[in-house]
Length: 518
Image (cartoon, rainbow, N blue to C red; front, side, top):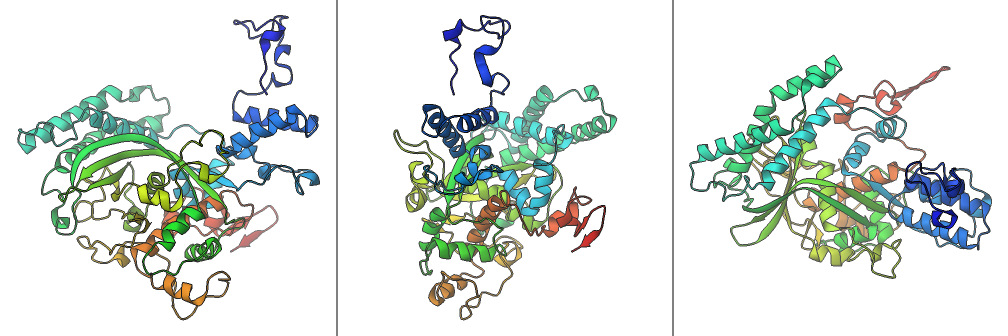
């Protein structure tokens, strides 16, 4: 797979041609792009034209395995169409567990409607960046710069009056914004230029909201009516736009489930059946050995010290745009992905180990849960509308609880919030009757005692945690299946942009011959 041009006299640095004036130095690879897609194409050609036991074929197979292990789906033979029967049977290559790589935003959109996600990401061509997206990116950059300068720390102008500190932080954020903002007059499209001007005019209020959190988030009275319920602690440091990558499978979640107080331990197959129940059934293609890989950036990760001396991690996701419903804020799947990212971080394989085996990526299962950071709150910060994250009636009222505590699913009692005294009002769990005495049909790997213990979790944060994790697995399966019975969420249907072409959202399929109504 590696071409050595030196053997033929080298490459002209001006033209890229070989010494003979042509591109023959690269041979059959001359027309391929120098990216993973090009490498996959070259490797597949090598497998097709060389004997299976030749050095060329072995090199190509190794290259494909490496790319597949790092999330390049096109390198996985399971995704190749029209394979000869020889590949379906007894291949000398060991079978790898399937792995799906997703971003947190893709997980969120796939859960809302997998068909719309496919239409926008698989069947759509390149699209120019929307004004709203560009504005959001700019606000993220301003908040990051401000945090890097330390204006969000308790020690910034600590001796100055509150109003003076707030004014100083606000002015600094505005100065950073003015430095980074684009010239709206250069936008050619009138509609886009007008939208950009509107966003620019409202930037002052948005930056003032961020400044309020930077200053007030370190004050004793910040939580208002929620102060009697919980404490977020004192900010020690914050990192912004921190990249993460995680990988996990049902075995990792099984360790958390079986460690949860009150449950009867199940095996991987039993857990898969229970989690499937929480999402209304798995899409076609669910496998118990499926590996989920998540990669993205965390907008803001805070390290805070509580009054008892303990340390907690807080995760903040900045949002620009419309304010969603209460249930969407608390049960946001992007925040769930961030939590999973910190709990099961992807680590390089040790020397000599195969990266295709999940265990080679550092601690897994119970060991990973034991050393995972303790997460206090995760929250969406709608900076165009609110002056504090997860604000509803009082700051932090709509924060997302931790998925895991003490090596298990979150077994802690629900923490009340102002106006939300019980979890039923904000934590999204399946509306199914979990009758301990009536085990549903189809649970072949769950006995009566295991079902009764599972049903006893009804209404708890542990069941909520497992529901959120099951949704992440659902999206991973939905992204790779060929046949899917999609059920768009109610909130998605209110704002669907693809309603005219998405059969799941429209409830019908229009063809030149007929209309099929759902």
